[in-house]
Image (cartoon, rainbow, N blue to C red; front, side, top):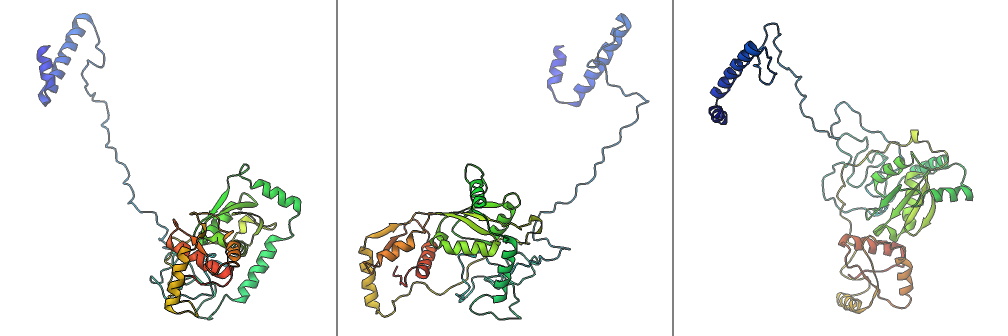
Length: 353
């Protein structure tokens, strides 16, 4: 046995042949003397001649790996959307009246190649072909009338006070977790699809607004109602409740192609000028120095609610010609957008950052 143990410690083919020979010899002696049939663990594994030879396991070859990509449009037609408005990345943070002075990238469509039947101009995907009609200063009036008619058909009769209260109670935090968050980009194009997805299961959806767009809440409400054809039935701070309408049919919801990436913002004219109109360069520098010594009217928190800013600035201008707002912690693009919104909504002002 000690000899066998020494052999089994070695990893060689001679050890396996020797152990098989000894096991077969011991099994034959036991069967002759004691009529003992050894168990399968001791008996030699001999193949019977009647056993059919096993066929090799031939598996089907695996298909070649093909990465899932939404850009693969072979054999598919581009999306045809009948929505009567121009497709933009953000509807609340962009203006149709201000024209850009340049582009930061080529006119690559963010919808992907051959996925949309509208051309991309670098700023938007217009509903009207720009080669056919040249629109300057704003959107086509026919599209605006078409949106109003479509919204009137979907809304139907106005809600009663009891129905409005019931919908508002359904959208409370303790009742449902359905919520759409609106951040510093405002009402984006892909957010429209998210709102319609929620409207499949509920009549009203809660929208939480934070950051720069909350400076002008009226613009958010108007753009939501204009682009989704819904109606805002509650506005409490930065929380909105958007109702889909009486005649809304989820099976006939509009086709909204998704943007695959965020396009680069075009180059717009400078918001902050070197000199203020009517003042020289030296007078502008002196006014900037005076503005640094003025106590801050308020300090803005990141992703906060800024609807109080416009009336606060208007009241401050009644007693002082310079107002300073502490924007420490915000990104540079954020406080530039806040300044642009204050120029539109508050009294005519100039910025001397």
